[in-house]
Length: 223
Ligand code: C5P
Image (cartoon, rainbow, N blue to C red; front, top):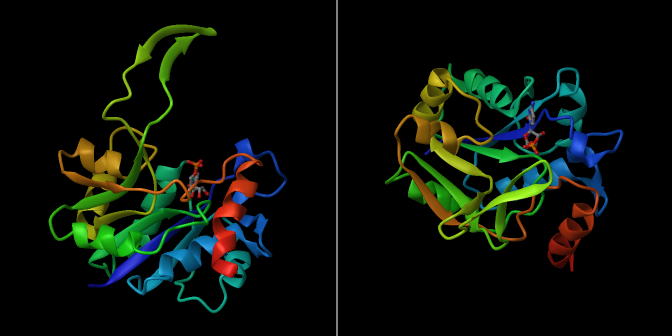
């Protein structure tokens, strides 16, 4: 099975509040994006990465990922969905069997996650890792609680998300509303997506304090 992973890095990371997008921040002496790339490749199931980056950052990212099996980076778009679509269209002329879509800001991916997702594609057109919601959920407006949302059966979607390539490309081409992950587009197309156990260590670096958590999760691999 030919598997390509889109490494999503075209976001500006405005919530992170640094001059640089979060995926380029250093973690244990190496950019977060490179940790994410190495983690995707660690199980040997992905043949190549396709970085999707902000226009103008192509050469810098190629240098950051030097030595790894990478296709030339492509420029993303204004939203994450636009960026994923740009990556998929770049692969369409020579389509892989399966595609993974991974946030470049998730540097800690437990071994075994990628093979488990790809195995699920034998049955489902898409598969994602997700963690159960553990906080109590409130819906609110103007600073006041409107209601409590039952959390039973609710999950936090993580990446990498795995898809049969033709299914995800078609779902993106047919999309009529914006989605914050790719599974949502398959769901909108009425296709089943497998939900696999995620991991608390597979965090998305969003706020500066996430760096310390990511470092603590990565450190055991270097000891
Ligand atoms: O904004 P969010 O944290 O959901 O972004 C998740 C991932 O998607 C990040 O790795 C970010 O770089 C990427 N992204 C992108 N293009 C955008 C927005 C986000 O590739 N326009």
